[in-house]
Length: 355
Ligand SMILES: Cc1cc2nc3c(=O)[nH]c(=O)nc-3n(C[C@H](O)[C@H](O)[C@H](O)COP(=O)(O)O)c2cc1C
Image 1 (cartoon, rainbow, N blue to C red):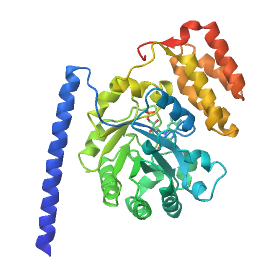
Image 2 (image 1 turned 90 degrees about the horizontal axis):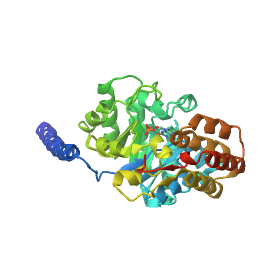
Image 3 (image 1 turned 180 degrees about the horizontal axis):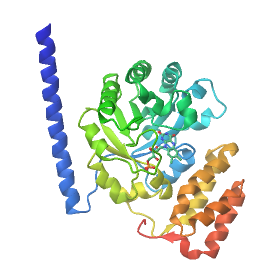
Image 4 (image 1 turned 180 degrees about the vertical axis):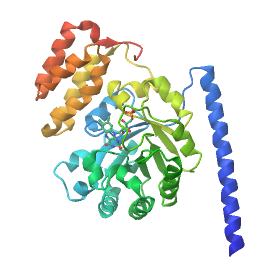
C-alpha cells in the first residue's frame, strides 16, 4: 500500500517535471521568435467578462472585425438564473458564436452555482466559468467573487459540487487573493485543479487593488509552472503587439478594456486585414444599432455609457464627448451627439494602422 503511494508520488513528480520542461522549451521557442520580431502566437485570445459590456451587441461588433477565440459573458447571477429572473434570456444569448461562448457565473451560494451549472447544460457553449475575482462590495457581501478566495476548503468543496453537475469545461477567473501571498495562491489553485477545474484565468492583482497598481504578470508564469491545467493571463494589455508578447508567458491571453476601445484589436493581433482607415463614427453607430437590436430598452442607457467610457479614449476630446453623452438618457440623443461631434471634428473620425 505504502509502496504504491510512493511510486504514484514519484511518477506524478516525474510527469510534472517533464511537462514543465516541455513548457519551458515552448516558451523559449516563442521568446526567440518574439525577439526576431513580428511574432504572432497561435495561443487563444479571450474576450474578458465585463459587466454591462460583454453582451451580444458588443460581441457582434468584435465578430464583425474577425472575432476572437472565446467570448466570456458578463457575470451572470447564479441565483437569478435559476429563479428565472426577468432579464435572463438576454444574459443567456450566446450568439454570434455559441461554440466559442463561455458563461460566467457569480454567486456565493453553492447550491445556486451547482444548479445554474446544471441548467446551462442545455445551452451550447465552450465552457462555464466561476467568478472568483470580482471585488465589488455587493458581490463580496453575498460570499461570491473574490470572497471565495478567503477559504481553500470552501472554494474546493464548491467546485467539487459544481463539477458533479456539469460536463462542460469548468474554469475559474480569479485574482492573487486578499493578500500578496504566492504560496496561498498556488495552494488555492492546486486544490481547484484537484477538484476538476480545467482552466484558470489569473488577473494578477489582490482583492483590494483597483486598476491603479499594475497587474503583476510575473505571477501568471509562476502559477503556470505549479499547475498542470492551462493558465490564462489578464490585465493591463494595451495593444495587439502586447497580446502577442504576453502570450509567451501563459496558455491564453484575456483582454478587457482595450477590446472595448479597439474592437478590432483581436484581428490586428492575428494579422487579419483591417479596414483602412478605421471609421470610429461608423463603429459607434453600428454599436448603437446593435444595442437596440440585441438588448432590452431598460439596459440601453447604462450599456451605452459603459461602452463609450472606453471607446471614447480613441478621441482627443474624449472627456468632452463622454460628458456630452452622459447628459443624454436615450440612444437617439446619444447618436445625435456623436454625429454632431464627428461633423465638427472630422479629423477625429478615422484612425489608421489600428492605432
Ligand atoms: C466595466 C468592467 C466590468 C467588469 N466585469 C467583470 C465581470 O463581470 N466578471 C469578471 O470576472 N471580471 C470583470 N471585470 C474584470 C475584467 O474581466 C478584467 O479582469 C479586468 O478589466 C482587467 O483586464 P483589462 O486590463 O484587459 O481590462 C470587469 C472589468 C471592467 C472594466
